[in-house]
Each structure stands twice: as structure tokens, then as C-alpha cells.
Image 1 (cartoon, rainbow, N blue to C red):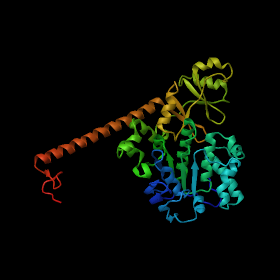
Image 2 (tube, rainbow, N blue to C red; image 1 turned 180 degrees about the vertical axis):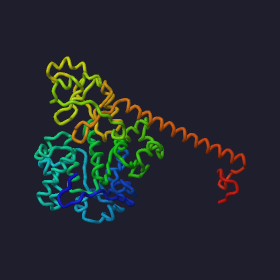
Image 3 (cartoon, rainbow, N blue to C red; image 1 turned 30 degrees about the vertical axis):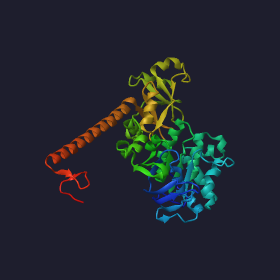
Image 4 (tube, rainbow, N blue to C red; image 1 turned 120 degrees about the vertical axis):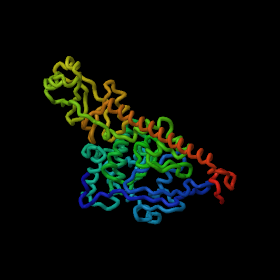
Amino acid sequence: MPEPSGTTAATGAGIRLENLTKRYAGSPGPAVENVSMEIKAGELVVFVGPSGCGKSTTLKMINRLIEPTAGRIRIGDEDVTGIDPVRLRRKVGYAIQSSGLFPHMTVAQNIALVPKMAGWPRPRIRDRVAEMLDLVGLEPGEFHGRYPRQLSGGQQQRVGVARALAADPPVLLMDEPFGAVDPITRDHLQDELIRLQHELHKTIVFVTHDFDEAIKLGDRIAVLRERSHIAQFDTPEAILTNPADDFVSGFVGAGAALKRLNLTRVRDVGVVDFPTAGVDDPLQSIFDLLRSGTTNEVLLLDRHRRPYKWLRRGDLSRAKGSLARAGTLVHDTVTRDATLRDALEAVLTDNAGRVAVTGRRGEYTGVVDMETLMNNVHELLEADRLEAVEHQHQLQEQRALLTRQEQEGGYAAGPDGTDGPAGVTA
């Protein structure tokens, strides 16, 4: 991404929480109790847990929107527990549910807010606003002067993320930012966040109550109990395959193997090229392509090279010199950052068993089909089966070893009455 003049983009900074505690007056116990955690620079960590467990409170203590009662917060090499909280918040981006945009300000004014408070010169702010809009996939010329009420929910959330990133902070805090939008928009916003993180490498702490969202987004997930006690802090793969206890298993739920579809991206599987034509191509050339015998279908692209219609040979008879009524409109597409689960859902809603894959601005980049997706699903299920067999084999070996030791007299009652190695005393 282009940099503002005279600056270098800030990558992520490590975060360390040390015995972080929050008590509210009149409450019998702390809302958050002795939370210690280290988050690596450039890592996206997701807090997930039941309502009221303290995950949002813990997040807000990182930028001191909520002041901790006890404990330390370190960002990079700096203990930020005692510095001016306003200065702290200028170096920590913050995005919330429903975007939190100021309704009386334009999109540009909202994004420019923190750079303006930081004293950036006007030309640099102007360039940064345009850069941020472009980064989140909104055309600067079209959205610069709009007000939040003139935006869809998804567009508002994109502007909220742009505002949080405008001053180029190393840390971004996100408190259920996609919880108020519809499921389709939510999937697209999640994909956008994944793409942004690949480009920017910020340190992101993300709060959600949706475990599937946590699996899709997180480099690591912190499953939190009451008072933000950490039940398990690990990679999505480790939590899915080896939950620490019954509490964590409850979050994983049924179908752990299928949930792993959220761990693989479309970019990691075989995206194939597909015959395409443009809406401005001569009709005869499209006819010739379909009649050539090499393909039964063509993907028609609009003037911006975005998927527009699927055209089959049988549609030619209805064209009558125009493609206006011919073919089937493209309803679903996925990006290269979408998960296999997203792609599978899109393919299953399409009778032809394929979905177009698009780039950052919706431009066509390829197609992924049912055969490719099902092969990957079978590989995941087979890997799970082999892992379960290996685990069972290890348990059998352990039981056989214990049996041999007991038969050889290697084990006897220990000094406390429990089984223990013979001859061992306290």
C-alpha cells in the first residue's frame, strides 16, 4: 500500500498483560482477575467466551478506556499503565460494533479525526484519507463526502476500520465489530480483515462471541471463562483437535472436522481459469467460443472485469442479437481470502457446482468447483481419522505398558494409598 509522504508504515507491536485486574465498587468479586497474557507483534488474537465473562472489559483496559484496578499493560517496550490515556489511544486503533462513526461528520472527516488531533499537515491528511478508503475497498471520489447515514451497514464498518487505522497505529482493538451486520456482509468484512492483515501486519486483538468467527480470523484464540480466566490460549487447529477441557469442548461443539474448513483459504486450493468474455465483446466471438466444443459455458465479465453472467450454449438461441436476456446472473462470488466453508456454501447454492473467485475490487481471478472443495474436505476428514487412530494407538500402548509394569511388580500402593512406583517414598 502507498505510504503517506515522509512516513514508514508501522507494523505490529507486542502486547503483554501482567496480572490485569478490574474491580467495580459494590461488586462482590472482580470483573477481570489476574489476567496475564503475551500477544506477539503482528499477531491476530481473538478473545471468545460467554456473555459477561469480561472479554470486552479486558480489551478496553488495553487502551485504558477502562482503567485497570491492578496489573500492568506493556505495548512494545513501554509500560503504558501510567502514561496519558489520550496519548495512548492515539497509538492504539479502536473499532467497535455499528462502526461508532460521528453522524454529523462526513466519511473523510471521520477518518481524518485522529491524524488531525495528532497535528498532521492538511495535505498529508487528505492523502491518508484517500489511501485508507482505497485500502478498505471504497472509492475515495465516491465516498469522501458522504455522511454515515448514506452508507450501508457494511460500508460503515469499513469506514470504521479505516478510521481506526488512519494514524497508522501498531495495535488495533476490535470489539465485536461485525456483530450488527447481516451474515453475508459479515463474511465479506471478515475476508477484508484477513486481506488487510496480510498487507499491514498489525497486532490485532478481536472480541467475539462467535466461535466460528474466532476460528476463521485468529492466529490464536483465547477461550475465556468468568473473570477472563484463560481456559485455553492456542491456535485454532490445536483447540479444534485437542480442547483443554469440557468447557472448551462446549465452544468447539459438534462437527470439529467441518469447522476446520474455516482454517483453509480459497487461495490455498486449486483455483482454475475459466473461459471468459466481456460484455463489449462482439456477439459473434462469444458464439464462436461457445460453439468451439472446448467449453459448454462462458463467464461474462462486466466493463470492470467483474463476474456478471454465466452463459451456456443453450442461451445462444435466446440472445437474438443481445445478451440482455441471455444467461444467468452471478449471485455469489468469493475472494481468495474466503474460507473453504464460505466457498462450499456458495457452491452448494449453485446448481452448476462452481463459484467465481474475485480479487480486491471484485475483479475476476478464477473459479473454484465442487470437485476441488470435496477433495479438500475428504483430506481433512481423513487427516482427522488418522489422528484419531494414532491417538487410540498411543492410549493402547500406554495401557499395555502399565499392565506389564503391574504384572512385573513394578507398581504398588504408594505412601498415600494411591498407585505409585514400588519403592518410591515421599
